[in-house]
Amino acid sequence: MTEPSKVIHVRNVGHEISENDLLQLFQPFGVITKLVMLRAKNQALLQMQDVPSAINALQLYTNIQPTIRGRNVYVQFSSHQELTTMDQNTQGRGDEPNRILLVTIHHMLYPITVEVLHQVFSPHGFVEKIVTFQKSAGFQALIQYQSRQCAVQARTSLQGRNIYDGCCQLDIQFSNLDELQVNYNNDRSRDFTNPNLPSEQKGRSSQQPAYGDVVGYPQIPNAAAIAAAFGGGLPPGISGTNDRCTVLASNLNPDRIDEDKLFNLFSLYGNIVRIKLLRNKPDHALVQMGDGFQAELAVHFLKGAMLFGKRLEVNFSKHPNITQGSDTHEYMHSNLNRFNRNAAKNYRYCCSPTKMIHLSTLPQDITEEEIGNLVEEHGTIVNTKLFEMNGKKQALVLFETEEEATEALVCKHATSLAGSIVRISFSQLQSIRENH
Image (cartoon, rainbow, N blue to C red; front, side, top):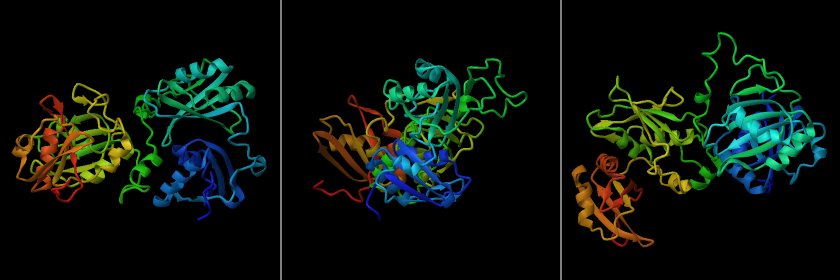
């Protein structure tokens, strides 16, 4: 292994792979300051803003084989510690000023339209055209100014800033395009020099993805942070590259299940946006997770779990998201979502259902007997243990089977006990030691 460098060397970069494809692969790890395509050798050099970003990228891509357009690409640290503009010669990329900016928006909690972008970028000069698109790296936009000087000024003053307080962070690079092609004036693209363009192609409206389908307020999963949470690599069987957020749970017990019980189970693996029980198939439900990575964890860890006498089936849904309606339950702003704070710690606790549940945020004066009373209707309790962590009361309860433990978690998570809202998750401990 060469010594770490912020410059990454990529091999097997086929002619069908664009600069943008490479940016997508490394953008989750931080700002990319330079990119040089060595077309003759099918290689590329890419410089991250700092060494830790590059190390995070390589740690993940050593465990997961990165592919672009179906082709495996191979990454390693470059022997260069820094790319000089000489290496870039005439490639013109990254730091080579241009009147067109490539903008990536991180932590996008609110939908961003052409209007919003125009408000943000027009104070710096006349914006001629804007094109937006949704990619696996997140939401991106190309913004064309009348002059290069305006683009440079906009990038200097806006780079790294948030559009809204605490979210929608701008990551701005110079594009190497010469002119943007805009065919329609709508929420996704706009030519400010030609207001007479149609809003969409005649007769094609059904195939144009509606803006609402494209943006499910994605919080871009930070692959580096997630890999770090799992100790540098992802759990076996998890690709980390899934972008489908909605999962279909089937073979449920229609007499015993409801949305809140599904929430209690699926929220172990990520934040829940909304849940819908299917009226025409009472043993089916759709669950929309916060992002594709969380959905992949839920499918991986819950497939085949036993609940209410049935073996759960969990698969990715063909629907990109669940349309909000009278038959959906909304959880996007629920303070019961577990991944709002300290998500990395929660990822580490992800596992398939076990026989042991861990209860926290308990009343300070709770007794083991009261813990037993809370969950004993769900199965045979083998052992309980009450203990204190950082001055707070917590408990472990061991059941005879995974199914009993799952039922207790699903029915009693987020219930109130003497004024405290009890949190329940699965424990990966095998047995309760008396000297916990």
